[in-house]
Amino acid sequence: MLLFLTLAATSEILDSLAMAPLATLGLVQLLEPKIPALASRRGRIGSILLKLVLGYMVIGYTGGIESHFWLLLLLPVVTAAATFGLVGTLVFSIVASGFYLSFLLYINWSQMTVEGQDLSELVARVAFLAMAGNLANSLAEDLRVQSEKHRRTAEHLAEANRQVLVAHEAVRRSDKLAALGQLTAGLAHELRNPLGTIKASAEMLNLQLSAENEVAREVAGFISTEVDRTNSLVTRFLQFARPLRLRLETADLAHLLDRAIAEAEREAPGIAVYRNYAPEIPPFAFDAELMERVFYNLVLNAAQATAHGGTVTVKTRAEGRIAEIAVIDRGAGIDAAQMKDIFNPFFTTKPEGVGLGLAIVAKIVDEHGGKIAVESEPGKGSIFCVSLPMDPAPSKPTE
Image (cartoon, rainbow, N blue to C red; front, side):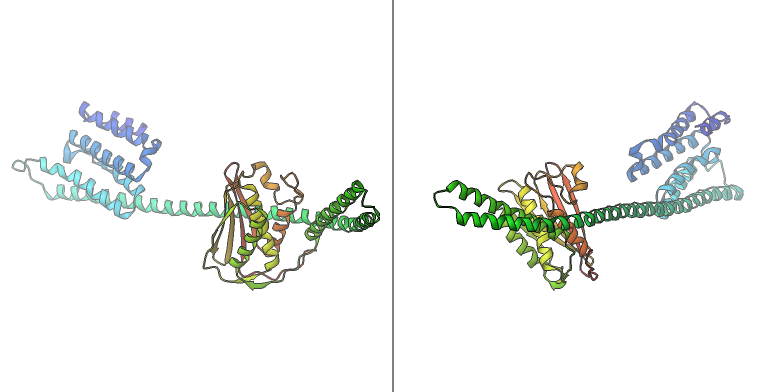
């Protein structure tokens, strides 16, 4: 703005007609970076054409071909060079030169001749416009290359930071699993012996009771049933705490998913499960028994979160040498505050849940060298995504 004011104040040949387009040109140049609509390709072209017209008017009002304000044509040329590539710069340089040379049409050639010095001046001015545009384009191209490098570096840093956070969360979960696993294993072994004694005593009591004592028989039956349920819970604790020894065998992922889905459908009837398998996933090595437990748990959880008559989708795809399996439901979703804890042992939102299902799932996936992630939005459903390497490294038992 100061430069335009200086230009207007020190130019004696400016009259009121030339002052208006010059002021408008200064206003356009000043406001251009602040108007979002001018940031688009079409907006930039409109801005460049407007500068050309305003500059043409100033030059026309101040002497035409002999005007000292011909340098105003540098504004649209440099703007084009900073926005477009080499071809765009050349196009607008030619257009600006054409605008300037068009003032030759207004000369009365019967009363005026162009000498060699004047012709050289015209050629020099046109060449100067092209040179300035080319230089500005070169500098702008260097800036664009550097900006792209910085953008990619920022994206790589953001991805690396995300992976560090994921790895940190996995290590934290593994440490917690190890500590809880040792505690659970000891507690489960201590519970098994008295449970066996209680069940045996209940069965002996049931045999000794007379047929007339129905209340005592019913109580003995309750004792035996609850002991079985508790023993099943202890077994799950031991499964969680016991070191995993993978038995890797080449198998077909689609067949495994079909078995897990069929088992989950028996447990949760009334839910339709759609299969969307990628045919390009070849058979690869994994522990079929453990992975069937993983997808059975995920499909069953999705079915239980879905209203009766709803649908669950199981989708697979190949991402390089990674097989991705997504279990998608349209249920109640998971609250954001609970997302960080859903794979932790003993965390559950079910009234009768124990909180070991997803913890065991995460443990099995980790042992296969894979990853499990969840996306969820309350009221819209959840997506559990398991990523398994199709070239798994040999697994070591978890101590």
